[in-house]
Length: 582
Image (cartoon, rainbow, N blue to C red; front, side):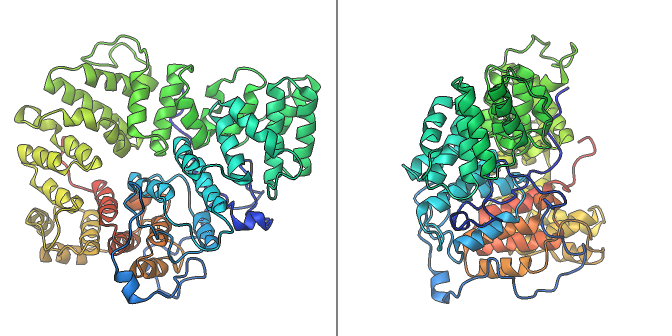
């Protein structure tokens, strides 16, 4: 059976390909084959002791805000000329070195859908580059590397097209992408120009260019050139055992015995293909996000591989919900009884795809609701409900809320909230009489501003009667307070009588203080990155309530209220009271 995805987090060892690369900094001059040295941690700095309110010392040197006049921070920002909704001066308050240091502390890709949505907009925004870059290429390269490590291969093309001709660093990243997605001829034309002496590539990137030149030579059938390129790559300090072994085998005319690395990169996979057809099942559990994305898009692969790769990419937010839906649709799956897609012993790896197809052919509303409920319950058990909810949101939207399908109401609300369809969510809540869900919908909707929504009275009554868990009490009070929504007295009192949860991620000392300062100065890019560091790898659902409250408050203060509400709702959905049947 194909595993759903590997469980280990994929962390950015170092994203920076900017000024420090040009200067030959050993800590930043890393390529796509860089791996942690023995004993080197791939985790961020240790978190503070959980459950202990942090002291708020002065922030560390990284990300320290620059002096800013009150007048400037209060001016309405000029927005970037794109759909990101972010200001043109997104990186105000950060120079390139500080930006690199902030990026180095992140684990990518973000597992939280709300955080990932924010992260993707941050990378695609056509904002003014930060100070400190000798030219535009260095900042573009940094964005491209971050997109690559997040598995956002398609978005790399958007940045490349906007940048134009590029320079040697950007051209290498372009060639890496072209070869990775199967456009060999385009990639090898670029590599031919980069692998000659005097190409102006900095540091060990010369070694990567030589390694890719060896790949292109092997593709062309030039065994001698492939072996020579491998030797040149070694001289440049490249440590890529699998590709180097493949090139050595090509040069010698032998088939080497290979051991798969702990993490199989997209370019590792392309080198393996030089030896013959690759069984994706053997590398799937070790695949990096970029490789998963490419496997999902390989229409010539087995349906099981495409579907499993698409779902693994979806868990990592590396594929859009629309793309995953297309992967489901294009498969020629065995005929099944649409009353129960698992009735004839269907392959478990195909189960969600079968349910998706059954949803699309179902005619009766109650039948469609049953299949929607089944696919989402399955996704909930597998740990990616929020992502799957966005995949099926168009089908759920076509299901009209009515008493005949009221049993689907809570699931319908969650789907509508995932797609920011607040009116649809309200209709489901009203049809089924789920008044406590109206409170969450009002918290989620950025249009509901000012004062206290009347819907919160239901939650106050539940709190007074002791029917809310401590986790729900504290998260709800924290999110409301951070959004400047009046917390009902009964809810506040009930939360104050229960111990504050001591679990959840807390960042290292100084991060929350730096976050508050960045938000107060309206330094939007720095605020967004510090929010990611504050919440940790688990996102808002896995964060301590202290970090959660500070993150939501900072985003709202920086002018990103919609993002603040999405974070809050994602944290609350995990603990929101549901009907016993659900």
